[in-house]
Image (cartoon, rainbow, N blue to C red; front, side, top):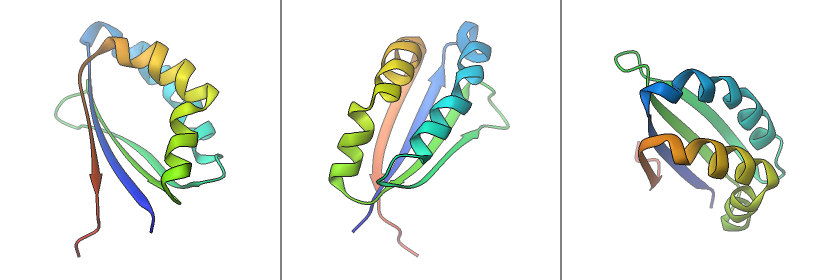
Amino acid sequence: MTIELIAKWKIKESETERILKILPELAEKSRNETGNVFYAIYRSESDPDELILHEQYRDEDAVETHKSSEHYQAIVVREIIPHLALREVTRVQKFL
């Protein structure tokens, strides 16, 4: 059974443009991970500082591989998380 995640990020306004510039590298490297099934980043139309990430992984090992990857640690942990006003990650299951 695949693991599906929805993450909501609210970026501190002063950091939005800088973070938007590094997201393409994060998305590309995440999509190229062996256990990645799907990886998309959405930007809110009503709030330019709000992002929604939709991720799907083959299994729990793939999630852990993603979280421990060099690019996740360098980009997300060191460059993005410190500049977020809000970060929520929810595991979801398709209902319909």
